[in-house]
Image 1: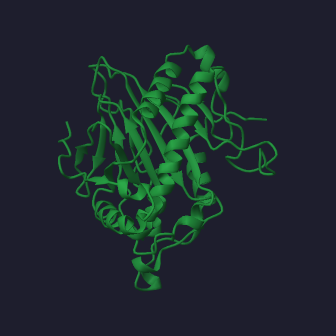
Image 2 (image 1 turned 45 degrees about the horizontal axis):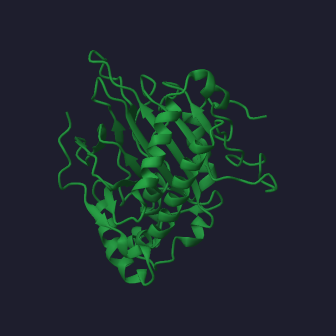
Length: 329
C-alpha cells in the first residue's frame, strides 16, 4: 500500500482569487502553485467558494446514474464527439506520456459532458469534439450536473491568474488561450475490487492527464495514488471541503517539463464499497498554439517540444485511447 501523502501534497487557500483585488493574492497563490508543480504536480485547494450542496448534488447524480441498468445507459454510449456514457471496463490506456499500454481495461465506468454548443454554431457537428451532449431522461440529474459544471468552470477561470503568476507572467497571461476554454466533466464510478483480484486489476491505469489542469472531487473511499519523482507512490487522501488539483501534459509542455505532469492511478482498495469521483478537465481553446515559454528555456536547443496546436495534440491522444466511440451520424 502506498504511504499517505501527509505534507507532500500542499493545501493552497485560493479564497483571495474569488474577489476584487485578486492581483496581489494571485502572486502568492502562484508561488505556491509553482512550488507544487515543480514537485509532485498535485495540490489541494480550499477557499474555492463552491457550495457544499453543489458538490453533494453532483455526487448524488453520479451515484444515481451509474445505478441505472445498462439498457438505460447504453443508448447514450459515448459518441464521436466524446460525450456520453463509457461502459464498465470499456477503456484501456493505450497512449500515455510515460507508460507502456495497459494490459487490462480500466475498471471503471463514466459519464462525460462537454460545453453545450448551440446547433446554430457553424462548428456544430462539423469539428472534432463540437457536438451534442447526451443526457438521460432525468431533469433533476441534468440540473445537478450542469450546476456543478458551471460552478467548476467559473472556479477554473478564477484560478488562471494564479497559474499565470506561477509561470512568471502577468496575471492575465493565460486568459487569451482560454477564450473560451475547452472543458470536460467526467462522473466516474469504480466498483469494489475483489479480494483475489490480480495485480493489474486497476481502477484506472497509471497515466498523466492530457491538458492544462484537472480539478477533482473525490469521496472518502480512497484509492487515488500519485507517483513521486523517484518512482514511488503516495496516497492522495480525501480532505473534506477540498478539491484535488493536478497539472497535465500541456502545462508540462508549456514549461519545458519544469512543471511536473505527475503520473497517477486509482485502485479502489475496498472489497465492499463503490468509489465515486468527479473530474473537471480545464484545457485551452482548441485553436491555441502551445509552445515553450521563454522563461523555461535559455536557448532554442533547450526546448524539448515543437509547437503544436492544442486540437491536434488532444485529438491524437483521445483517438488512441478511446477507439470505442460510436459514430454520432
